[in-house]
Image (tube, rainbow, N blue to C red):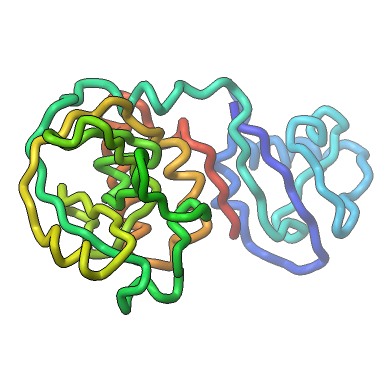
Amino acid sequence: MYNSRLTTTGLSVALGAALSSCALPNQPLLSYWKEMRLKKAGPLETGKQYEVRKALAKNIPFRPSQIKGYTFVFQTPRPPLMVASNSHRNSQMHVRTTAYTHNESDHLVYGVKNAIGTNLKFGNVRSAAADWSRFPVGTKFRIAGQPNVVYEVDDYGSALVGTGTIDLYKPSKSMMNDWGVRHVDIEVIQWGSYERSMELMRDRTKWKHVRSMMEGIEARLRTAGLPAANLPVTASL
């Protein structure tokens, strides 16, 4: 079940059609408004937030002219999306890899920071960038021939979206160039979380490649039988 919070203003915004989708279990919301107008109830106060079900219980009518926007918040337990990212996926695969470093031109603005806001790693655990709809954030893997090194997907890049390529972080341009492009065998030792990937990208959708990754994750969840409605959704009109 969804819970809606309504912020009211004195402005007239025609939201009746949009809010009609927020129907009560056995009664459309618009019909409920008409019924409530026949009863005595105090008007909504400008600038105050209301929960739909609490307001309905108090016989407060909802008038489209008073509503500026609404936000959906998912309240029932959600299926663990990490399980979804683990399901039906091979742990061993042959992939194309490239390399990047923090001081190349397209990464200068981010410096040594990765997409999750921490420092890029290069040690026994090393940072890697990928399309998060294919390799969600937190995915850990090893490359054949490097048994003592674990790579963790904590970054992404616009050129990687829509590809199966994984970009490996190197601390210098010489090491980046030495790696070049290699096709390697990897073993995924832990799949990451689609849920965390979505949460991290939710405020970055002005970028086309981020929107593409979000859409890719939603498509994978639908394929796995988990509708996009199971994700936390924020809508505002």
